[in-house]
Amino acid sequence: MLEPPPIRVQPLLEVRRLRVEIDARRGASVAVDDVSFDIAPGEVLGVVGESGAGKSLTAAAIIGLLDPPVHMTSGEIRLAGSRIDNLAPAEMRRVRGRCIGTIFQDPFTSLDPLFTIGEQLVETISTHFPLSQHGARERALALLGEVGIPAPGTRFDQYPHQLSGGMRQRVVVALALAGEPRLIIADEPTSALDVSVQAQIIALLKRLCDEHAMAIMLITHDMGVIVDAAHRVAVMYAGRIAEIGPMREIVHAGQHPYTVGLMRCVPKVGEARATLAQIEGAMPQPGAVPPGCAFHPRCPHVIDRCRSERPELSTAGASRAACWLYASES
Image 1 (tube, helix red, strand yellow):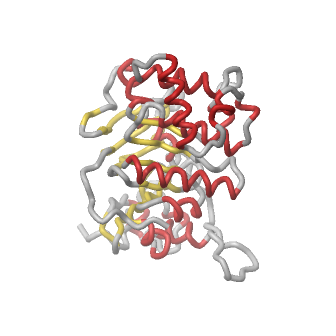
Image 2: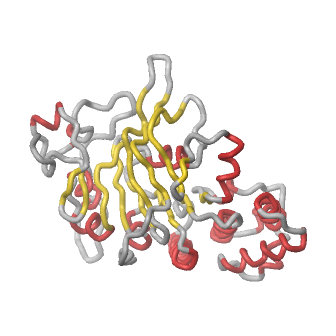
Image 3: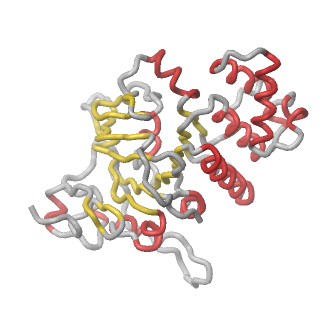
């Protein structure tokens, strides 16, 4: 379990009032609505929520990989103080890999089966640095060693199918590090792996975060991963941030009713239950979000104001929650 960094430093990533829409025949629907957060160097921000909450679309907007009919309609994204959401496609391609590394869910689909591990690493390294073939190979071998792959010289000449799932994901991490980025976006990086390998990959990401002072945006639905890896947590619901705060507070003393419901769904060691708790109902689809607080149809604490007015993030203990239970009367 990570302790929060003792001193909050200047953010590396700043996302302000991000809005992402999906065009359709009946008009545009909002998939990410007014999302703001930041991540500091050496910090892991965990982003959690049910499927369809907008987690992956937020990440795709940051790295400039939204494809029509999905597009960013407003907001700002800054990396190390410089705005990147308005860059031309060619400029954004230079940012990806060199400044922002990405780790996706399925390591097998992230690697080209027709090329060896070494060929893929050398190509990525050569894209970002003016190294000779020998220099790029040495850098690739060093990366394989850094991410914990045994016998890097042997693995260098192997194809993805010759490696286990855990080894393939370590290669994906090495590819993400090849450009020496300052920010890593990891979208469900362990969900395709078994439990023991998950722990190894999370330990690897934590070590890299500490050693390289990288900022990491870790998207997951697994609260065990959040507890093991995150300093802070952003809980997303229906395209908005429902609550954001220190990991310990979110996990052990969540303030938003949705956060509380999520935590109750997680089984605890030593706790005997006949059935797991669940949140009644389902998350609304983009374009069908109810007025007011999007969670109000499922909330056990709903009041009339929740049905008509949408709350903003307000101080709630050590975190901030978008809930009328904590918002000051206006």
